[in-house]
Image (cartoon, rainbow, N blue to C red):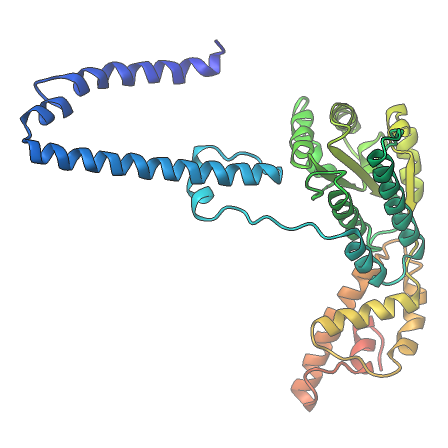
Length: 366
């Protein structure tokens, strides 16, 4: 018996030793009360006990059914403390979307034409493999793990989430959920802790996708504490091998950094054989992204705002810290602040952003 089990075992034995004489004694306790009670009271007590037992069985059956339903989604067990939530508010089962619905959402995204072609090719291959299996034809195993390369803010996380939905709808993965992590989520500050932290995230992503952003920082030279990063990589590779049919790992980062990252370990090169390159957004794409963001917040942009913003976008996008669509979110926030200041002084349409607001958001005078 393990040391961790000795204390609960001893405590259980002590409880049994104390309660058994009390429960069976004819001088006091339940047995004594039963002997002293009259027939009518005994009948009432028996009916109450039966009702309580049936209620307990009903609650147990409800909790078991809810637990099994959540297990079907890959949800981890919560123990006894999770029973009230299982009974009162079990997690809702989310229906899987069809590959056509997922790809329709992808096609509606701005730009990313090469990425959309890759995803369409992926769906075609998976559907063909399904047809071959249905006809009893052999299907060669192909690594499903991927490398996403490109600058930040170009939709890598959104595409990874869509791929998870596709895998789920095609029954390649049972859940297809996305667990997004970075170096800080995997690497600890002391020897031996990194493996446990990495395994925790791997188990969380089981039957779905583990998305590691800026994965190159795990390799030597990618950041401080490179030995701990190597421990995370080794733990990840072993988990991928042991659960090859239950997890897909997508690593993402800048193109050159990811190339060096894959080359640091033969195990990485052998498992990550598919690379999807995400191009940066053009000024035209960024203007369309800004327009959509504004529309979702019920703001309209003036005619010709593209011409006013294009020179700033062309210049600013050459900076090393440029983050594409994220920059448009920041620009919209600053434009709203400029609009609020303008409307407070001059009045105007609360739903309309003017070119002067956009130019002030960029730091330029109108």
